[in-house]
Length: 167
Length: 148
Length: 162
Figure 1 (cartoon, each protein chain N blue to C red):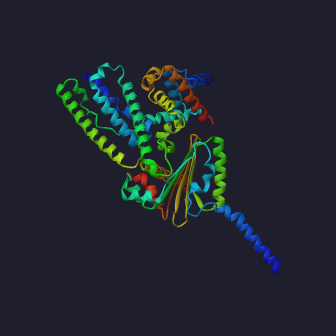
Figure 2: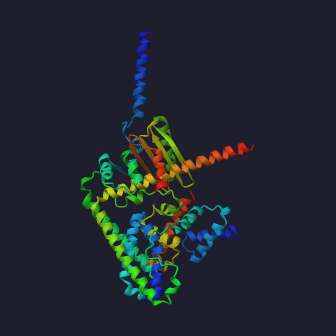
Figure 3: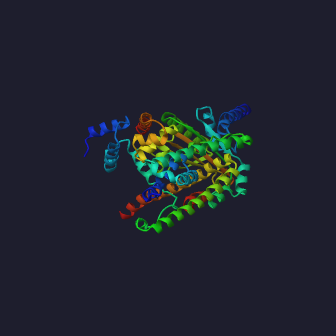
């Protein structure tokens, strides 16, 4: 009985090591960009940049945002990351397939909205159930991929939605 | 109705950059009027037409509806030139102060900031689209049900 | 000053703004470029009578203003980026623009092309200009215009038929 218990314990530990690591390949605070797109960093034209907490704060303090509604939303945001790179149709389909699988397995992100047309795909992801901690958008159109992510403690989706009505 | 062969020939000529402007206009007009043709070029031509409708925010140089009288009244011409000169002066002042402010700001921040603003606006538009599509889907699913 | 030339100056505004927007790909830069262009054209008003085609000339000034604007931005970036670890490129905004709005989709479609091909496609497809006029605006030969237009359209063909 004891031996069986030890075997079960070892099995459970090895399971956690094998799958737990993959699930948490990034840190908890990582963005959508870090979680799923750093593997493409060596691809030609890959270009990522980040607006850190200090820069967001400085722009907030300077009241630099061009619209009061944007300023309100940016008070809820800590960091912003984005990347862009040219993509081929073949790469796009395999990348999307892989992304879908990873997001499903990872379970940190929920697909909030997906729009697919003949020439473009746009997907919005959110992280957090009660409080939205991140909004990420993946766009592929006419041979170009962009991924952007806004990270905060509590991002109000309704404020973001209302933005284009209030401008 | 343009024959399929003729349409194909014209499209080939278009891609070879051999068409005249008149032929290109005729081709675009024909495809616009016959969406059922479903050629793959339609999204591009549609995008070209949509771009022609881009709003022009500059209004300062526009004259009023009394434009036709300008030819007859030289005093109007002078006034109009003066108005234009004042407008240009105002524009220059705005341009100088804007460029000075821009220069003062870190340009790298400005570029990132514009990305942030554009992305937020884009997400906002998409969330609105999502709501609208969902409402339509619910309407289509519920209303026929009610009618039954 | 000839009244009809003055009216041409007024009426060419929207075209010049649209061209500035197609180059800058964002409203605030397009407005700045457009304003600078109008001021330059106005300052040259004594020469208007000698210009064969005011619109084409205005477009050429718009493009040169845009190129100077880009150069100045690049210079400032080099000066100011010392403190930043990640270095954004001057055409960053252009690269990040994947435009969902149908009105701006044209720019999105031609975005992967080199700048000159984008300009030629814009001037031919949107403004419907002859090769000679495009050549005059972009200060290249008409045969070059044709070659670049061919390449641009081939790109559109490949991307619309996928």
